[in-house]
Image (cartoon, rainbow, N blue to C red; front, top):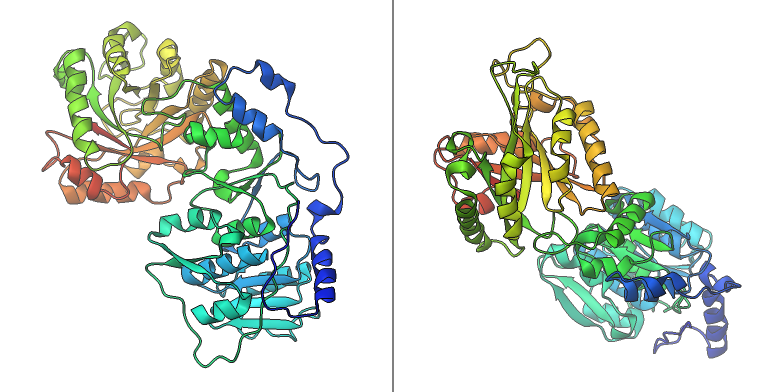
Amino acid sequence: MAFNETPVRHLISIAASAALVLGLASCSSAEQEQPEETQAASTSTESDNSPYREAKTENLARVVSEDFPQTPTVISDPGYSGIESSKMFFDSSETVVVAGAGISQELRAASIGVVAHSPVLHAPGINDAAVIAEIERLGASTVLLVGDALPGFDENSLEKVNTVIHDPGTEEALAELTSLQFEDKTVEDISDVTRMTAQLVPEEQTLLVPSWEKMPEKAGAEKVEAFPVQTKRDGDMAPVVIASPESGISAVATARAYGAEIRFMDYPDPRLNSETMEMVAGLADKPLLALGDQFGTGELLSAKIERGETITTELPGGGGLVFPGRRMVALYGHPSGPALGAMGEQPPAEAVARVKEMAAEYQQFEEQPVIPAFEVIATVASEFPGDDGNFSNEFAPEELTGYIDAITEAGGYAVIDLQPGRASFLEQAKLYEDLLKRPNVGLALDPEWKIGPDEQPMTRVGSAEASEIDEVAQWLAQLIDENKLPQKAFVLHQFQTQMLRDRESIKTDYPELAFVLHADGHGVAEEKIATWNTMREGLSPNYFMAWKNFYDEDFPTFSPQQTYEEVNPRPWFVSYQ
């Protein structure tokens, strides 16, 4: 049921106010016409034994206006303008709040807009025409400009606009604008701006103020006109709306101004943990709005929800995603001994104890769980062709299981590493299909010695094409889907650009896979950092970064504190060779 927010100062007579309120209440599409039928929660939840049964029942019981999309939909927000959010939630509005450049201006506009139930737009100076067009579409008669928004915009700019209010930016002006007493709430870190915007409550009249930036004030401004406060629009028929740190302030504020509840998740994938899965349980084919392109497409979001509901086995450290939610520290090597890396320097139990101690050292510098891991070499290039002529040694799966069993039973993670000569990645990956059916076993592809059909391994640094990576990714994603497995780490090793020449063409949007780019260069610190930075150039944001510390080839080997504090961004996966 809609309710009215009544300002102390009346701009018009009581009778006219009542007419205006009725007019404003009717201008939202959600309240023009109630749905003819209200569907109850699906009876299928009665036989649902998943951990999200109660959340599904609650989510499916929501009555959502038919004017909203009836399946998961991502609301794009180019330039963080809030325009698309305004179009989604408001058919029209008598008022609009427009913020200029700067977080302080956006947060002040958001705070006012939520209390006034007014759409909030962001005009930092690069999209003025688009913002003005949205004001015109809304048919607004009163526009509040916060900060340096829309210079030159006045009552003559659009036919229906008859009042343009310039906010002086002061505490006194805020009281004059709304006739309400706002309470300041400081935002200490920029990473919290969206979360705190999503938590704004109209009845509490909170003004969000960033600790690192002051609101520009306009000295000598005349007495400020009052800004009308509208009624809440949603009529308790808004869909579930989700946001993440990447969501725009104005887009989130507009949804809150409409009356929608914002469910905030720390990462734009509901499989992050059980709490975020409960936010969207049962909504894979039902109304759900996601604020920002970081959520992907509606179809991809739907697939992630379905996978999260299907997979109930959590990964080490909790949740259904490999990253984020945890970081990993791994010993790299082969069970045969120390020649191929540090893992094989000791038997499985001792190797587990060693890597657990290493993970504990890293944990001192990280809030997320740091999980012990092994990166186990399964195939390695050879100078000899072998019986199959592929210049690659493939170790039997049973040779690897001792170490894999040990680390996974200890609550850790294992990654099977492929280093073929002339063999294909796919044919080698299939050799370890049974191991990859385990929930806590991922796959790494290392093209360091992968060469052409007429080349000899170890004569040059090898390479792989995007098409070769894609065929493995597709096969592994299908294996995960068919066996209802949690997401897997899919690691690509690279320390030269030519190793993955067409990396940008690799398909990275499989919800079953966490793509990891392992920049495993060695040498002095400056060389390693230079390799790291080069490997990150042009890299898709869908990748998580991994780092390797070499005991014998780094000068010196980075300490845990150096690895986490001097390598930027902080690596999600760190291996030792």
